[in-house]
Image: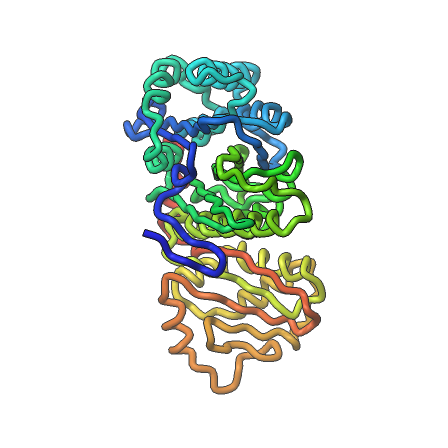
Length: 408
């Protein structure tokens, strides 16, 4: 099944919708639950690679090893585990991450430095390497052109459902496919990445052009999300481009690269929204859009301040149109704010004008909008032409329950 949106044709499936990409997911026994916890993505041909990682100063061993491997600009496989983050595990953690890339490389007959690695789960616990060593041959055997869903399942921790997206875009008369999987529904307010997002494409991308496109796509998608304002130590976004579409190489500045970039951002934005919609304990996906700011940076700062406010997020959870909390969150941020120029709308219904409750406001209509699973809060600062948006969710008692007992 396909659906067309603008220049993009959305496809069923995720990363294995891309020609030449195989994936798989198996149970290694890392998770006590006995669910899938080891994933592998493999390109049957060598691929250009680019990745973006967490800017948290505390970084997991897989992040450090992958950052080193991706520097060469080529990769052919991504191995990811869930249930143990391999963070704050010292020299042993680095050795374990390197061993995993070596073992995968041997199984797939590719160099170890062409294998990227990621891990998610509890911090400060060493990987159960005996279990992983035993499971890796089974994982390599599980690789299949239909294995994208199994890989999406195997990277989940507290996600309630797998995240997949794929589309086709016409570039210079040739169809190019882009597909990806993602996970991460807490400890999420990325700056440079998200929890995990692995994307593949069959596009031919010129040397040196992929990294900038990936960074821009991440900035417009995952960098515009927040669940709880906390930033993971394991954030990894990796993109493999295997060139099987045989299009003319996409060069920096060319129209074809811009079309590809639009498709890549569309896939990442869809995955990013899925992450926020599945946030731990959440029931609502809310777009906080700010316009009329003195600059685009001010718009983003203001949107993020509102989107991150626990008081705003709890009001969203209770369908409470407590607009005073939005004014508070605007006022505390470093963006330029003139309270007498602020207007706020929920969906199409205006709630605040010139910094005060709108005369004749229909509060019952706003509460109806707030009962939806998805809606927009639009804030106009009345100061300029800057605009931006952040996707957020509500904060519930369930979020507190899940995170008060995460390691026990």
